[in-house]
Length: 131
Image 1 (cartoon, rainbow, N blue to C red):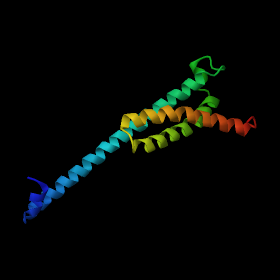
Image 2 (image 1 turned 45 degrees about the vertical axis):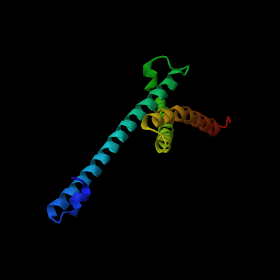
Image 3 (image 1 turned 90 degrees about the vertical axis):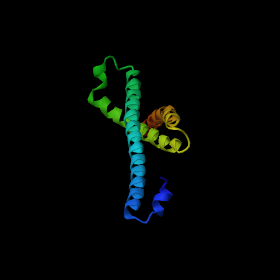
Image 4 (image 1 turned 30 degrees about the horizontal axis):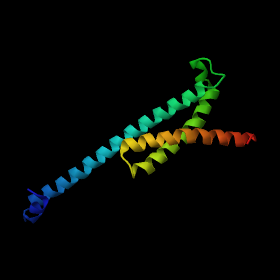
């Protein structure tokens, strides 16, 4: 039976069925979007963290993995990670309105990670007076 047919019935039971179908439809849509957002945040954070560690690994003073987890490098990791992650999240939010999930995820990180790193580097250079 269609929703219109159920609404036409005068019994209270028919009205309850229509409301239940609409509630189930709304709840299933919400659950799907919540799951996609959880996957996005998890994948995005691991990808940005991995790129930050690769950037630190390219540093000439890093000779072993233990050099990456020193207190000074952990502070620098936070300084690089947070703005880059927030920029990627903003770009994903903007691109997701116009593209599919896969395309917007890839494009947001393809643009956001280099721009985020360059922005942090330029900001640090400007703060030290070398720019």
